[in-house]
Length: 95
Image (cartoon, rainbow, N blue to C red; front, side, top):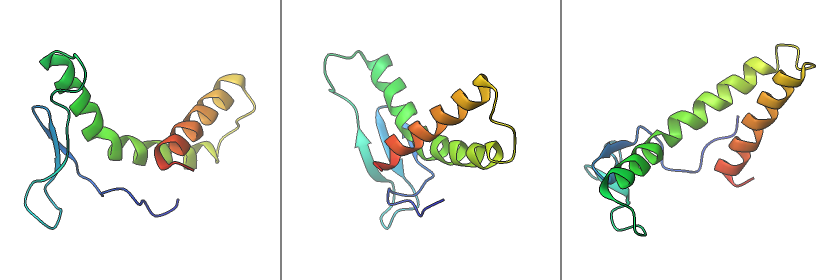
């Protein structure tokens, strides 16, 4: 796997804010989704949680593709899952 160019995790969610407590400054804000569109607060918090999980989700997908490389991908289900994981990784990394 290539070295990530995004802000390294962990990312933490607090309300509508996503921060990185290990950044150079305490609780460095990565983003705050409050006021995004006409979303209600519950949806904004759900969006922030999803964003905060992004580094972990990317790492999990990368680990799964390593496992997929060790198994038979000839079945349609395995091939589709592998291709979905690769597509999501590519989208996340902008490759």
